[in-house]
Length: 471
RNA sequence: GGCGACGUACCCAAGUGGUUAAGGGGGGGGUCUGCAAAACCCCUAUUCAGCGGUUCGAAUCCGCUCGUCGCCUCCA
Image: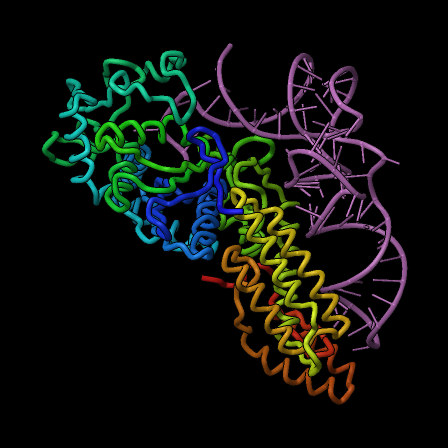
């Protein structure tokens, strides 16, 4: 079976065929940096990361672009409130965002273009749209996309533009336009707002325009994959398609992938309603980043996921199970003949894992394959049924699969000050069968956040307490 | 109102026409261990929201009912 995705455009499960064999261009709508992103946002970035990692693992040369929206109504509003230039605010939250990405082990995108650094590309796009008759100016210097000029409008979201409900908010839009459904490409300058002097006038870019201009700047007029949350399907991505294809005359994106929402307490996590949890709060509660990562990754990306304390605890236990096995395999020493069944077991696991992810990134069966192997290996370990080199081979497979998942390795390996001396002393005490001394040392280590376990292959330690100073 | 997704054990979650309904978490019992921890073994859904229908056969297909959620607003 080959790699397939459920394309939002058309809704069918389609074999993935990149435009250029072996190379993939992928764009993800990134954050608007006026506040720390919440874990609902990170669910969608984590999904994009899983996609990117899996494509890379399969051998594709991936170019991943994620924009940073650093000019926007809310940014302007909050910067004014604080009395600082928008750049101060966006620099601060961009830094927070990048740190959060790293902590969650999200691969750094190859390019993270800022909107404010791509004004010329956006202006060029608007000029083309004006020339081609798809855009018009209004009295205040704004420029709108004329939906009536683009018959394919509504194809992605499967909506009939004619039937669009005209709500009060649409009508109350502050910018005058010919048709309420038209969307702003360029917003005319207003007093007190940042603006750029350009060939199309003084103003600032509309949100949809940024993504079209920056994705095409780095990936070309047509590229393979575009991801985002389902809430972006309409109007954001619909608008991106309209303005991009109207400007270039070429198909914009091959496959659109949208991640379902993260819910909390039965409703969508959203800044607007205040129903949010942020990574920093989760870590402060003692949960490790990789547990959060697995919790957000473990449901299929198109299924909505309810975030709860229980889901976090389950993920934390699962993640511990993986790293405990890796530690056991790493420390295992048994000079014996290789286990003849092991190669087939490992190969079957890899096959199940791959077949699952090939099927529209079905993570649950992929995890099932991995955990079946975990149980099997633990059993063999307990029975001393594999050799030292078998253990090395098995650990290598798990680490290889974990290049896609990035949850198995512990977050931090650094021992606290003085812990090594205590560990050494305890090993000596155990060698002398001094149980009282050894237990006392174990208590001291526990107080330092180091839990010690005794195995046939010797003493093994791990850091407890979840967040342990990673990044 | 329009469009869309979904309802599987105590919790999360696979499975979408045919072997014993994956996997994770939790709970109960046991084994191993100086103790602890980890790990392993056994148990925890004769049943897939409800009701009809199609079929030799349905959690899977069709219809209806009930329930949940999302989008239609510059939200990931």
